[in-house]
Length: 540
Image 1 (cartoon, rainbow, N blue to C red):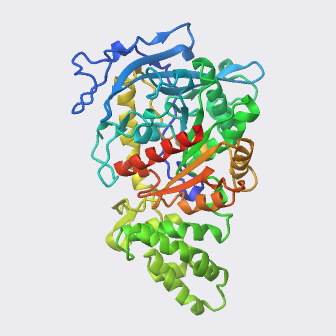
Image 2: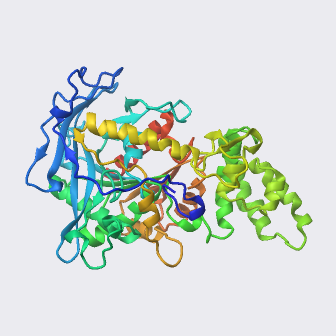
Image 3: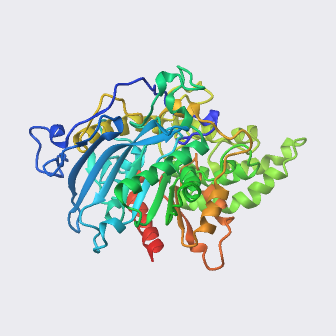
């Protein structure tokens, strides 16, 4: 998943990581085109470099590269003046605390404090991660939270390349400063081979960032980046929030505890977008619970494609009622010695999911996610995306049992890669020949998972809620997201132990759309409003 989590659903495109020359960060003035238009001209969206500071370069280290630029975001309520900083932060590792990686970050801070006059050093700050493992933060950066967003069609589908880069009227910068972080091996972040690759245990063909590619090493490293950013920017008094999409939601639940244990830092809130909190709820190992939790998203996707009656919301609500009654008991009571006795059950599942009864019967009522996406629209010669059941594409190979790639996810790769590379150069003053790794298959394939059991962050989330009595959690999902279905998070949230009267500290919201529901402008606005409400509630 971009998430990616088992081999059958491992749909990330193959992107090579190369041994690359050092990145060079240009001054903002050098990056500005000679014929740049007026700052933030809505029709042309030219970069505002006229008020930019020169990039700061001190010393000879790679980590000293830093570009600082000034901009304005036009909003109906008036322009927001802000500063953007693109820089590398060093990750140190080993007994000698040598620099083992450079982590690329982009920070946005509102100039002059907050709108209500709060001192700049006390303004909320949100640290933002995407998932994968192997995804850079560009999806949330240019998809939902930042001052610029990639333009999609009105229904959230992909537009023709290159996609436009637009002012974001729903940028979270209006209510919190933002720090976007690319984990090692993603975006422009890279591991560093030390001692010419001769350090103990090193292999010449092994990526130097691999030491950070595990659940524990990743959460520890990203917690350290948060600590380092707070130290360098003098923001210890700021309320602190973690934001994570998909695996990033799992990551920030782990980080909330890691920050307390390793650095003594407590966060005020967690905002999870399409997360997986407990892998046992979305893949094998969860028993009959897994297909029951998937069923409402299947039904919503079928309704969106006019294969079952009602709206996606109505179909999902009906499937929720059925999932934990007739469906779950039907699965548990199947008599494999008398297949005919179950035909009424299979017919009901087919009516709920929009799938042919013959297919439901063949899979004994438990339809894998990739099979659902592959077969839902076979009669129309199309396939659905596991990331959004409303997104369909022409079937590239009708004879294949499974698709070689996900049409929506793979389509987003050139969209966001091109947009971020152009944005980094033209707006942030970053010049580099290093390829931007939006989704690193090398990181994803090289990730080290726990050797036993399904990965889970439930205990970490529970501990964070217990240790931080004011902590609030928002979990946002798309209704037609098939890869991290919303019911999985509802299941987890319903089993968290909270004191009487504090159930509102954990909220699960459901939006129209899929895994990246924010590609639809109305849902992006709703997500921003929910995030703002959580932050304001956490600060009361």
